Structures are given as structure tokens and as C-alpha cells.
Length: 220
Image 1 (cartoon, one colour):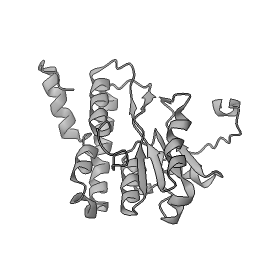
Image 2 (tube, rainbow, N blue to C red):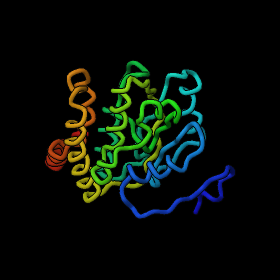
Image 3 (cartoon, one colour):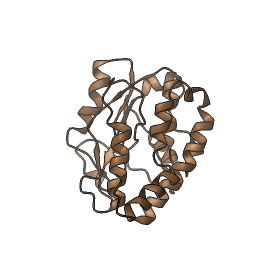
Image 4 (tube, one colour):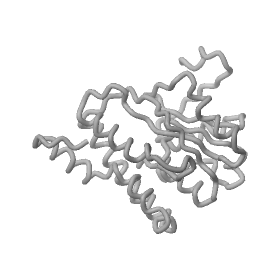
């Protein structure tokens, strides 16, 4: 494993693929430090990535989570461009640094002690195959009144998105958001924009955009 070649001490854990929520929970259970960083296997991070995510934590002891987004730096297909544009609309909003946003677990850091006090340290395994475990996690922190900080530095997703991957994302996100809406009903009235931006992966919306693009009207 590449991790064993890192300069700092690391531990590699192998387990059967059961979805991102269970994988992250395994990492959390085996962690020893105060700050937990999350990313994905198809992502490249900047050499200062740890510094960017850690900075809000060091500046404000009330911040329990810092994070941002991921984009494809060299989009090759329509689907790459669609995902980039959807993510930019959801994440890159001018406004309060501490505004509630749909954070991405490919680019996230949490303060272990603060999250543990609110009993939200682990990801909900109901999302093990549906996706949206990161959206659910952020909303749970919001309900616990834990401060989150947005970092406007995306990580680079290096996997190009084809039609199969596009449909897989749409279906999993649409299914996951059904569960998210049901679980966080109390927040929908006070955070309508959050639920709107978190739903940008809806299957119907994505298909409509693709059909318009096919007709020559590029909608990114």
C-alpha cells in the first residue's frame, strides 16, 4: 500500500466493500488523534490540504467540522462538466464562512472531541449504499448546533465520469436524499436552500439537462 511509504506513522485496514459510511467508521474507530481527515481513493489533494482544513479549527475552538468540495480539474466529458457546474453552484456561494453547506467527505476534517460530545462521531450506516452520508452528517451537526467552516479550496477528482457513472451517481444521490429529507424534516423549513442545493443530483434534473445538451442547448 502507498500509505506505508508516508513519512508519518500510518495503519492500513482492509475490509470488504460495504460503502463509504462503514469504511469511514472503521477509520474513526481505529483513530487516535484529535483531528480526523477524510478523502477518497480517486482524489488528489494539494500539499497544503491538511493546513487548509486545520486552520479554522486552530482559529476557533467552536468549529467542529471544516470542509469543501471536489471537482474534476480536466473535464473530458459532458458528465464531468455537469458535475463540476453542479458542485460549484452548491459549494461556491459568496456569504458567511460558517454558513451551512453540503460538505463532501472527500474533503473534510472533524474535531473528534467536540463531535463526540454531541454523539455524532460516526456516520449513519443507513447510507451505506445510498450515498449522501456526508449530507446527513453535516445536517446532524447543524441540529446539534456545532459550528462548521467552509474551505473554498476543492480537491481534484481524477476519475472521469461516463454515462454509467453519471447514472449511478444520480440514482444513489436521489435515493439518499429521500432518506435525508425524512430524517431531517425539522430543518427543511429553516434551511430550504440547503435542501435545494443538496438535491442537485436528482435523477430527473440531471436527465433533463442531458437531453437539452443533446439537442444542442448546452446547460452546465
